[in-house]
Image 1 (cartoon, rainbow, N blue to C red):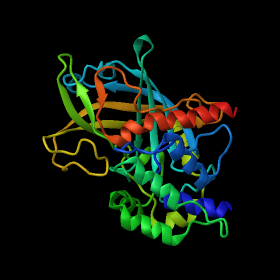
Image 2 (image 1 turned 90 degrees about the vertical axis):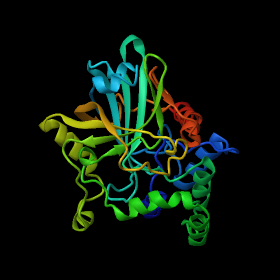
Image 3 (image 1 turned 30 degrees about the horizontal axis):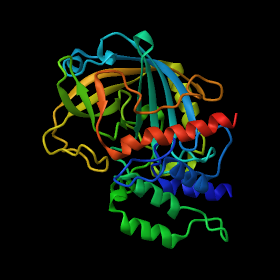
Image 4 (image 1 turned 180 degrees about the vertical axis):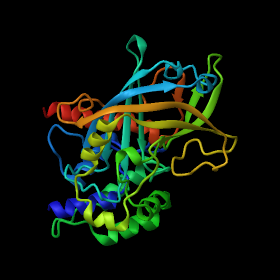
Length: 332
């Protein structure tokens, strides 16, 4: 059964959230999607339904004046903002191998003045694998284990891929790029389009990427065979023990016609960019009992100055997170 869970983690590829993906015109119920995830991976009482395997970290973020010109968010005050971070693997298998060609996540809680909070949740892929929540639910249903074999039906997976082209770009990206050698040597993308809103109320469409100052490094094919199943946490703890780890928040400015509500579609690479700030991670620890463990990293928890778009995937995440969070609270 454990081997089958490893295989499922790879098949799911990018389950980026503690629950599911977006809301379309006829979005599935959040509870239905969370139940489908449980059907694929089973449940670990008191734990996340997705991105269950993770590592806590702490540090701070300092925004830039350039970002403050187009956003009134206190994130960009220029003063250090404390951050509680969590790095993770996608899927609901707590023993998922760190060499799996699946998504890696970075979730951030910014602890702003006057008790305000702001959340950012990201993946190490520039696009998401579903344009609406129904695609995600259909994927989970295709991955349900056959009672007779304990494995998903290959024909159902084949049918899903053929009927859901919005899943292809991310699946291809993960299949053709080896996993990162360390959480510290990976980029993370916000996936969705957001709005920066300035002091006068003017909104600017943006997408962001956190770029590691350590540089990008992926496992080689040979390293995939020898790295083992549990190296990411120890590598991050060791790296932060050597000194701070930093990512630059690079923000792309949207232009008319750029995809605003479809996270599977990339913006043109030539879009103008600004450096909005630098994230510094100063320490990392195992998540059990650590500050990140109880946090529900709902991406719609936002301080003024940054707003969500009508992206159905983004909008659906909050109720789905709430279902997952409620379940793990009730089980403790």
